[in-house]
Image 1 (spheres, rainbow, N blue to C red):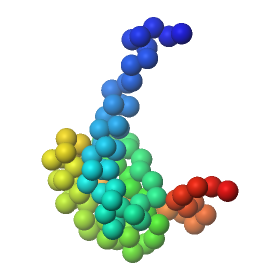
Image 2 (tube, rainbow, N blue to C red):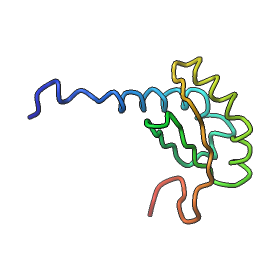
Image 3 (cartoon, rainbow, N blue to C red):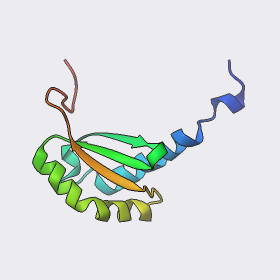
Length: 97
């Protein structure tokens, strides 16, 4: 069993957790948030990549990204940039069969 110090999460993991938690507070239960298929935090660039289920939602969230960033910052989850992309065909949100 690893020593207690090795079991602690890394600063990157903690940062990612804070970012995702802020995203969920701001967007998870919104109309727009229901069309998000995935999130990826790139620590090296302090960038949150948001994947959506359609091009129109990609455009909508891209237009809203500064509002979302400000709200995430207010929740303690400041992020340098938000990039919104459309999920590739064949990758869907939800349970897999």
